Length: 330
Image (cartoon, rainbow, N blue to C red; front, side):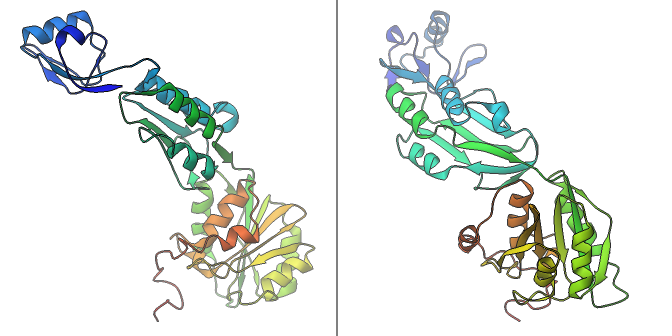
């Protein structure tokens, strides 16, 4: 693509680089100049004009953006995504349902390294998203790009995006208490708000004594797709009340602790294939904490492994929650 001043005699088919005022109205930048446009420009005294002239093998911005978006998401229905209409070299990609966004980051990195005029920006890996939320935007910066570079980008970014929709429909929050006057209302309300964002229904409020057998019995009895545990006393060891209760109920503890603050005291496991998440005390606040990242993935059927938890440390220093019992700088 050639860019710069173009005599009007050579400007037909070129892409107007800047909007130009005419006697009546104006020609918008990005317009492919037609004979009648040339006549209007000549009458208004605009000769030459700044324009982009395509060379053999160049692909116009909108067509290029659409082609790349379809490479990223070859089957939108299956991926749970919707491609917007191409305009000004841009195609936006949206979620069609609540869930978390799977991004194959290596493919996006490789794509973005190929040509400076071909770009894709996405939300972070495993970002929670609501229906109609924007997942990514494809932007062709110049008015056209070489076809060879576009094809290389399409190959590098093939199938790099999809939505992992919510798999769990009903979750049960089991709270333990060391105080007979504890209502559990705050934990129930905040958890419901979190689950609502993913379209998950929260079961009725359930509070038991903070002891292993009482909690184990409550875990055994629930038929929910996912089990959340919020203890009245912080879980401070792999063999504390809540992890031991999960084992006593016939489940497994897969991991305890995480390098995310707030959220250090999380544990998770499973019971007959259903996710069980021991929430840290900071989950009583609506503010973001490490448990959000784990819970959102597990509710969407995304496996979480100890290595995934370890990798959350970079970026894991979250905003402090003033209501916490012991602050970082207390």
